[in-house]
Image (cartoon, rainbow, N blue to C red; front, top):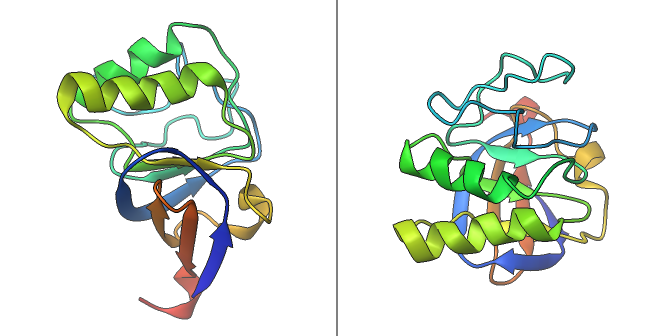
Length: 145
C-alpha cells in the first residue's frame, strides 16, 4: 500500500476503485447526472462512469454550474465516492460542501498531494480518501485484491 499526503478540502472518508485522467475535467457538460456517465466526447474518459469511483484528475475545467451538477449527481445517486486533484478549483469544493449540507452526503476531496496523483494512481487501483487528514491510500490493482 502506498500513502500520499495532501490537503483535505471537504471532510469525510471514502473508498473505491479509481478512474484516472491527466486531462482537466469540467462537470458542466462533462457528465450526465442521471447516469454518472462522462458525456464530453472530447475527453479521454468519454463513455466511462464516475458513480462510486474515486475520480482522479489534475484540475477542474469549467463553469460555476459545476457545483450544481455535483449536487444533481448526488441527488440521482451517481456521484463519485471521492475526488483527488492536483489543485481543486473553488467551484468544485463548493459542490462537495453543498452535497454535505443539502443531502448529508460526504464527497471527500483532497488536493496538493506530495506526489502527482494522476501519475501515481492508476485506473482500477483501490483508493481510500480521507478528507479530514488529507491522506490518500492506494492499493495497486496489479498487486491483487
